[in-house]
Image 1: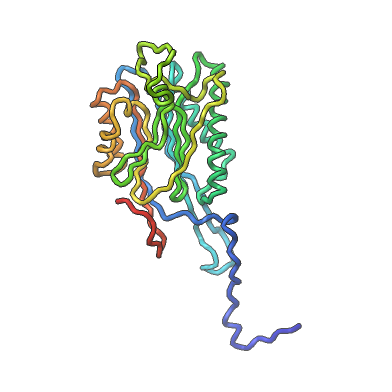
Image 2: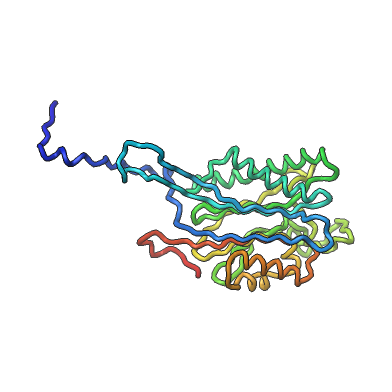
Length: 316
């Protein structure tokens, strides 16, 4: 079969064929337009020889850069970037607490580098996969700490709380008594549940022999990473949606032991940058007589709704 072409068609090259969009399972929705500001500050407890708290804030993503092509401008992007953001905080315990918290965070990140797909677009199947993977990573960290304990005097035990944001989805994984909070619409909400004796068995008597240095049941931690012979560690993994203006706080118990939620919320209401809020929170711990290490991470999310989206939540 032959086709004829009019003379004037030569100046009008054919348009690219419009491809049928893939199904939602094949192509998760694009990530939202977001700006995130971060702050972090750690204070060593008075009289302590070393700070057993460690933290990490990181950005990971998908990147494309066109180096050479015969395609005309406009057929594909020269640059493309999408990012997700992670925050991790760990509070080591015992004589090797500093090493335990360091090793826990480093192991978690190495697992993410070696095995993760670094999702920045999320649908329901991907969300389930991410939460399952987070729990498996925590269990791997627990196993690594137990194995490493054989090479060091004393057990390597630590709490660890991590959050990851992909678009407007916030995922968090947690073991111990460090905390993750969400500050929204002038209200502070604790996202994590303390793995401590008073939270696990509120108001109930206990046969645990509490040492003189920790007679408050808030300090008896029922779940930590690195405890040998205690059975599988319980890892809490959840997700929540973010809206414009949300603030996420991660804190070790050096702050929360001496400041209640009302005073923490008051510090988060202060104007300024996330670093300013971190200084206010660590200052609050110091002025309240904290003797433990106090570490805080703050993230402030500004989410711009897509054009024409009138239902996106805002929180200024």
